[in-house]
Amino acid sequence: MSKEMSRRDLLKMSGLAAAGVAGASLLGGCAPKAASSASDSGKAANGGSTAATTAAGHERAGLPSFLSAPEPIKDVKTTKDYDVVIVGAGAAGIPAAITAKEAGASVAVIQKESTAISQGNTATGILLDKSDPAGVEAVVSKLISEHDYRAKREQVELWAKNSGEAITWLFNLAQQCGAQVSDTTKKWTSGIAKVNDYEMNYLSIDFGPKPYNTGEGMKALAEYAEKQGVDFFYSTEAKQLVGDASGITGVIAKGAEGNIQFNAKKGVILAAGDYQNDDEMVNYYLPDLKHLGRKQTNKTGDGHKMAIWAGGAMEDLGHTKMLHDFDAGPGSMCDMPFLAVKMDGTRFCDETCGMSLMNNFLRSDADQGNYCQIFDNNYTETAASWPGKLFNQEAIKAYMPEEPGEKKGVYEGQIATFKADTLDELAKKLGITDAAAFKKAVERYNELVAKGSDEDFGKQAKWLTPIDTPPFYGIHRHVRVSAIVSGVNVDKHMQVLKDGTEEPIPGLFAIGNVAGNFFAGVDYTMWMPGLSLGRAHTQGYVIGKYVAEL
Image 1 (cartoon, rainbow, N blue to C red):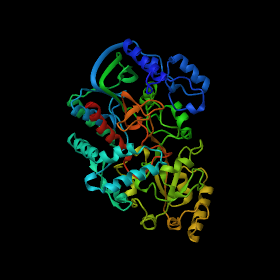
Image 2: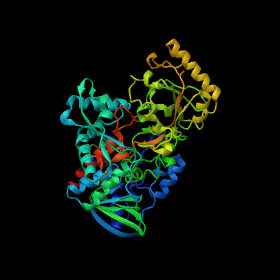
Image 3: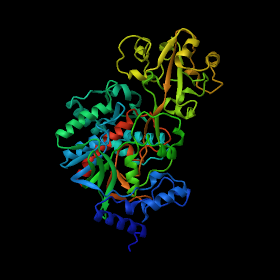
Image 4: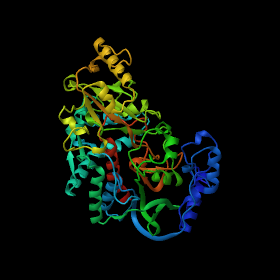
């Protein structure tokens, strides 16, 4: 036995070979074995144990069931052969399918939904030819610092050094396909035009205006991909990976007429989205989300689980969560440090922390992510110099359900901005349960404004503005989970790594929210607008071509 190959590796390879001979999934040899200590949590250790014994072991150890591989699927009805098989038709999977096809590969996309889906609107990339090279590296360093220095630099650099090309390509192609998409660079990136004094240039695009979103854009691009010869299998759910001694060779998915084995000559790309709708996974990795709502549906970590069962591992505990509400009121005003109160009327923080961090104060069953921003009729003057973009008294009506007229550029069912002549009336409209406590909080806030000193939470005096001129305004924000942007360990080519090693699993790749090592902090940073979709599009654009050319 060579020094490089351990007994564990031999067990794994022998299991893969047996599975390949049987024509079933590789689970018999790559199932996680029972963990013996808490130090094993979050990882799928690999050995020769069967799914049944693994499940029993995890039960004894108190570990969740998703770390245990199910029984191998054997009743395959049909087999289909491709060069590249992509699991997931979203912001990462669709670009991967198109670039893989452009590179000459035969491509199948497996999607458990009946159509392509994605969420959000904004994607950003760095224009390398118009940016200072030192600035590019400064952006990478800034993003790593924003996420507690736990990200892999190579992951962030993959986005930084390819995103301008990827987003430009996507923008041009989306326009060609008739999608509603526009250049919104000035809107989103004016505040980061210099990073560490280095000149930077970006391209930001938005699929919209709302309620049109990136999902609608991906549908248009999926139709284009089909015309180019990509085969889509909708309402078909990927269940297990297939492998042999050479690595991952395909995936088994369940369609309307039974199980289909999709063989992948060059590789399987997992792009199935996050795990926010799998309560067991969320409670294990992010228990602080227990009482916070979810914006998406049917995102059950399918890609993560299959990668774990194949011998990969989730990145370390402490995953990155994205929570916000850009829809109750203008998104450009969400981080402005207006007075913020809970639904019981009490003030609870220094409001300069920004909306994306508010979840940390609002995790209880009583709060469930709800709070209100409060300001008065003078806000367009008192907050005129604040970062962000103010919507004046006329423009903000689009977010006010009580105001007549057509609501353009919003999700009408989610708008929740109100005005009232009295604080009692405003409290009632916002749903604040204790009007007396609310009025007391406003009174106290005005006292602090007059003093020019926030003796309660220490907010800088320049952000203290009075609330004394009616009508009074309030935005009832409800921060909910938009995405969990953590996943399995990958290398610089987005190839899934074997548990506990830097060795890639041949033939298996993960992109978008199935992949880890890019964010890795507690909360998603809002410093770089459009980063989540920008990362997903870029990884798809780069890795689709990469796998096709193997």
